Image 1 (cartoon, helix red, strand yellow):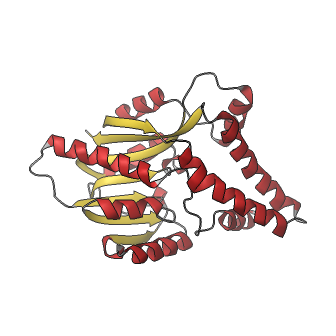
Image 2 (cartoon, helix red, strand yellow):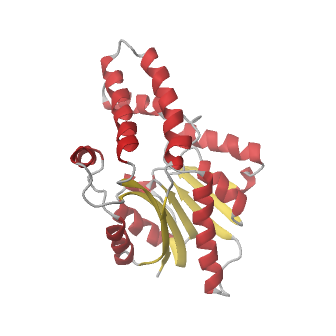
Image 3 (cartoon, helix red, strand yellow):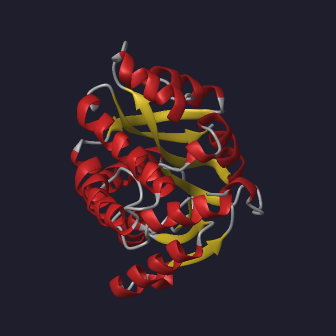
Length: 261
């Protein structure tokens, strides 16, 4: 496959109809939002706006965007570079009666043309890895108002010395992955005050992502049984799922919550 065919097949695997396109669940999104809103209330900044201007970058098909629209008082700009994901978000928002709170933006999150200091809250649920965690934090910092809030979930090591099979897998798949302490240090060095963090439960991987994805991979395996290149890609995702099944105690997605200093 050439690069274009590879991306076409990637989007065939991660179809917009999947419940979520990354690890997460509604309860974790709500928990992160509640923690940030609680920190905002505790600050008691009289000059802060009552309605939030929210940026959801790398929103995908918008599972978390719907939760933000449901529970946060404000307007959301949802950014993704794949139109079918935005179309699915629009469909979900209309079904929930929330489309009036969400503005869709087809754009690459690495090249956003937005005024600095525009947003009170930036939401990056499993998306900063596209830029790199530090680079993503720096880009979000400029988009936030003074004392603006940021929620970012990031793949992180949860224990030291993972088994060699697991280390070798991520040395190829995500060599930038570090532990929670290192990510917290990066957050501080990028000009943020950490407000809290928590690890997503294993159910947030299985129920919303891996079980539906396994069903889809099974169907695609039958469809492309005579296509060795596509079968190889399918196998790579099966391997990713097996890694989590075997080593979920060693790594996971961690929600990091912070305020711009």
